[in-house]
Structure formats: C-alpha cells, structure tokens
Image 1 (cartoon, rainbow, N blue to C red):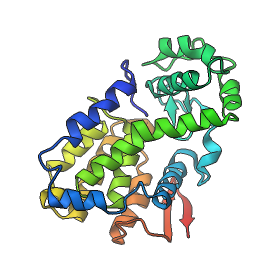
Image 2 (image 1 turned 180 degrees about the vertical axis):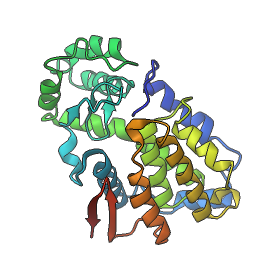
Image 3 (image 1 turned 90 degrees about the vertical axis):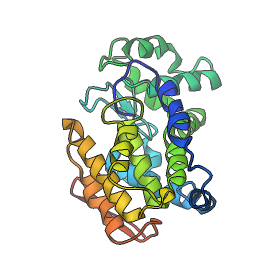
Image 4 (image 1 turned 180 degrees about the horizontal axis):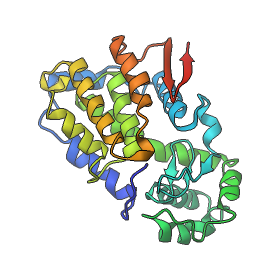
Length: 272
C-alpha cells in the first residue's frame, strides 16, 4: 500500500505467489497441517484483523466506515484512501479504480483514470484536485465500489499474506503480522518491503514449517518489521508492533483469541 513505485501493484504483488509461496517446504507435514487449521481467513478472525489494522490506520475499530476515507497524510504517496489505504502514488488505487470502472462503467471515478495513471509513482495531485476526494466519498456510497475495495484488499494484501503465513506454518497471529506488514510496506523489491522484512527474519530464525519455534521466529519477524518502519519518518512510530502485536505474542495468544487489549499511538482498544 505504501511504497511509491512506477510499476502497478497488480504486477508487484503477483510475484508473491511465484517467489515466496513456491518453496520446497510447501508440502511438508507442518505446512499442510497449518493450511488445514483455521487461519486468519476464518470470518471471525478476519473481522479482528480488519479492526486491528483500522485501529492503526484510522484510529477506529469501525473499519467499514473507512470506505469513504481519503486524505493526503503527507507521506509522499499522494492520496491515501479506503479500507486499506489505497494510495494514488503506489498503483493500488489505480488498480482499484480500474476494477470499479470495469464493473460499473461510467462511474464517478472513471474520469480520473488518466490522471491516476499519470501521478502513479509520485505524490502529485495533478488532475485529481479539487474534486477527487468529494467524488471518492460519493463512490463509497455504491455497493459495487465497496465490494471492489474488499476484493482488491483480498487479492493484493490479505490472501497473499495468509497464504504465505500458512506456508510458513504460522498460526493466526503470525498470519496477521504478515498482513499488517504487507498493508504498510507492500511487496516487491523495495528495501523495506514485506519480502525484505521476511528475508531478514529468516536470516535470524526458522519458521515452524522449517522446524523452528514459532515465538522465536515471530520475534525475529517483528524485529525486522520495526527496523523497516524506522527507515522512514512517516512510519517511525512502531506502536502498532510494540504495544499491539508484541503484546499478543508475549501473552502467547498465537490464535488472536478475544478478549484483546492493545494500544496504538497511545490510544487504547479492546475487542471482547
């Protein structure tokens, strides 16, 4: 979601399945067992995941109120919008609006497609201001646009994260740690991408699918995640890891079972 790139995220994220999930350990007994177990894709767990991400991205557990959200948060990625923070500068917003145009030709956002293609990879608003935020909010009243946001979230971020987490033999918390990392950092060849974060973790510990201890590996992954966040001022507050994911890990709550209590940016949240 977050890293500027001139290539479409549709292209970059497609590489996850090819280069991360394809592994000689894919069919190991540990990995097979992890895939068979309930994961973050269980509807109740997915709802928790969306609330956790929304607490960090929107300071609210009401993630469904974020379909209409849009602003430039000053992180160099142009407009950030929607339930997962699609960005005009990183290609995923462009992919979303293209999908919406395919499903609802002539919609209120379709005229912005040429501008979205031009600003991709930049923080520019050229061709979007002044009415793009207003029209985004109008589009968010359309169920077809909300469904397009859901589908792109799953295709680009959620499904690849869960798939890789299960392949690594991780339970729900680990799958969520992967998902949150992909949401913030995206994937691809960026030096702080999810792929790089995972690689740094693998240099320090083995995941369960490779015979390692899950808690040890997740600590290594979260260490690598914090390192990646601190490389960029916009992400330098690491509370979504330090006072959220690490809290669950220290308590041994590897399945993200409620009740859950955590903090992000100093604000407290609870799921009963």
